[in-house]
Length: 200
Image (cartoon, rainbow, N blue to C red; front, side, top):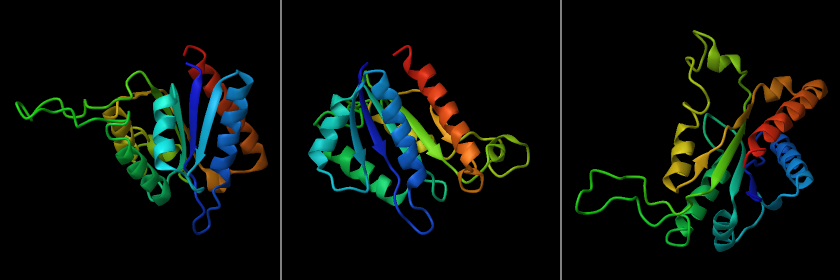
């Protein structure tokens, strides 16, 4: 698997300038280029053509999503990008139907995707510390990012046929983004990339 499509889902809004996810995107590109992967990218803040974006999904072996989490969801421009591109991909390689038939409409929902054989990896960035997801009595009630706030995102990718790779979640990015911690973030993330991609 040598063809990687990297999506930077950050945007400028309120006090956020989208800089952290731009940096994470750069780390990803730098690492994968050093391993001779073929790369295509999209920055959702820039103009794009829907058919070209559909073609990138169809072309890729692996899709890498980078997004901050705002109010426990994708930022609005990234959500619009997904809505528009996936809808444009109907019968063009992303999905053909919801998978059901009129003969027995109660079964096989979510099996009409066309991106089988592809994989995806999600990174998210949070103001919340990791302990907010793990400690008893804390805000997320011991529910992980993937099983909680990003559950629907993962089901979306399963719907179109993609298989989930282990993701990476950056925590305490606003209050903890010191120069020292950025170095740690980069090392830990690149170690994750090494582990994730070595067997693909």
